[in-house]
Image 1 (cartoon, rainbow, N blue to C red):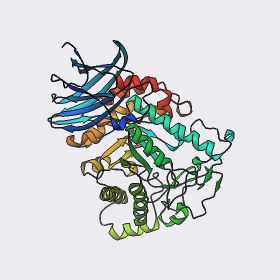
Image 2 (tube, rainbow, N blue to C red):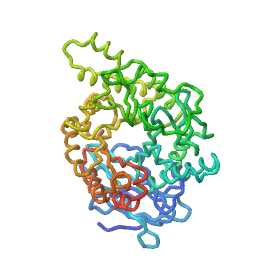
Image 3 (tube, rainbow, N blue to C red):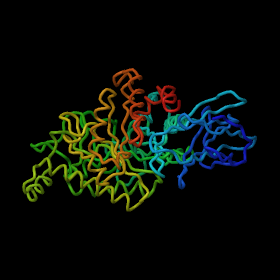
Image 4 (cartoon, rainbow, N blue to C red):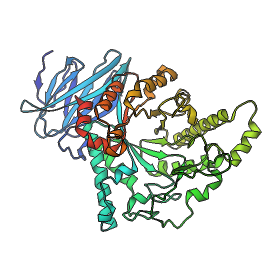
Length: 483
């Protein structure tokens, strides 16, 4: 099909419908930088609309799969384009947008989506942004004051989020709770030691990192999910902070009766997290209190549960939990009891969060294999297929980090999860393994893994871990997501 150039301000009526906009409110607050910004908006009947904004371009050229669509020119003073897609055949499709200036190509972008009947599902790309990403590259010894440190952390946040937006990332999984410490103002837990140059636990940094991230994401039209380490309350072994200035008992002390221990009643001694036992009733109450703080005070898009499992295969016990098991045992094994109790915890947190905000997206990071003999969901008492099939969660993020194992892991999930719910699977891409301190692997296997996930029309998208690795390989990721 031939492409035609039209002046802005007119509706076009062939394969695509385009109109230049005088404003695109969610996007105009963002710095356009060197890259276009694209925003998908709600579907209506058989169409789905996309806003496109980039002042550098005066023309866009469109293609859906191999079919060229009409082209629109942007006149001076206009702010962007709105694209409405027609109904397409069921399956996976790609919208390609080429940006031009004076006839020369500036950049190309790609949006992946699948269609089934009138339903249009744009695949989303997520970025895990950890608490350690926020302080990456900051040498505490060289920081002269808290205000200087705060500005460096804020600069990191802005940099990650802007790069995410221009690369085509749609959702940010922003870590707000680590090991019984938090990155927001809480009545229940201390500020993280990562938020000040002296590594003091509980020191008020004078700002709220979660609120700052919420504001930045709103300006960039990114969806922010609060990444929440659910059960850890402490990290044993060498202290990860120099001193505690919190002035109150730490969660690990207040909730000692809820901790998971080994058969001898001993806490985990080697380096690693101390976990609240998921079957203890006070654990459920406490986590709901933490969730209420976030849901009631921060306009986030979702809650993303991490470490919602047993800590290991040794620390499975707790006096209260064992007493409860003996009362209700019947014919069930202790393994079956723990699996059921973890399912109850997940479902109760889901219902609690939805009651406070029905629009929230509830998700969890889950182990990569469902039933394997090693690092699998079954061995750590997770039931991802049940959580999705029974609607205990909206999404699961299998941590399918190793490229060579991703196809096999992914097939396990596809086999266990109902076909109507497979778009609730968002596989993780372990790009962090390319970092020198994590394995120094080449980036090419991870790019191929992204192709594997993107080529499966049943899935809901993909998630990239971590922020530091994403920045290191920004050009490769940008190209993979857009060309």
